Length: 245
Image (tube, rainbow, N blue to C red; front, side, top):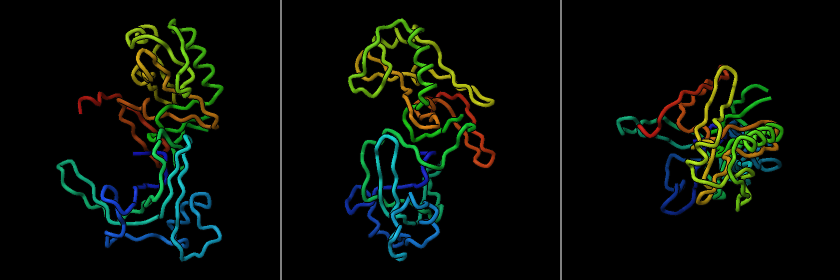
């Protein structure tokens, strides 16, 4: 479930473990002259210069290099309700993907909610929080001074700041990290601040971003109810122990 993407999409191939649109009597694709296709914008579809009657192909590109492509389609949808009943929601538009790269570490597309303009994007589809370089440098410098543990490079060279030791060592040595937004504070636990990349090597699960906006990822949203009021442009956080559900 991704709060940062414009298109709901599923794999559409003629095999047993994915959706085959040819077997659905209610499924059809949109053409290039449809409103649903136009809503994607020129950068989100491949209709430029093509016959308006041809299928509309969407393009999804993510900051980690992952991509997805396919036709914009519509079909009947139903979801399981709280009593395990099927809830019919009628027809929905969705991307019928004929190609997707498998390494979906995160994403960042257009329809996101941000905290002001010097600002943050809250995206459940991005794995790690991504801070603008000027904020990231200040942050990791403060961590370096506060945590008296041996530092070692990440063997995958994905994370910039890693510490050697047990989780108990990190838990006692590492300071608490709190994000301050307009009207709300989001305190991270050590489990949502660091990730164990190999035995006794813990890396900061917050990475550098070269984008203008920073992104608050889903690891840092764990054990929070996150509410989105799109009309008011407000994001709310309420602490919760998800293990109790």
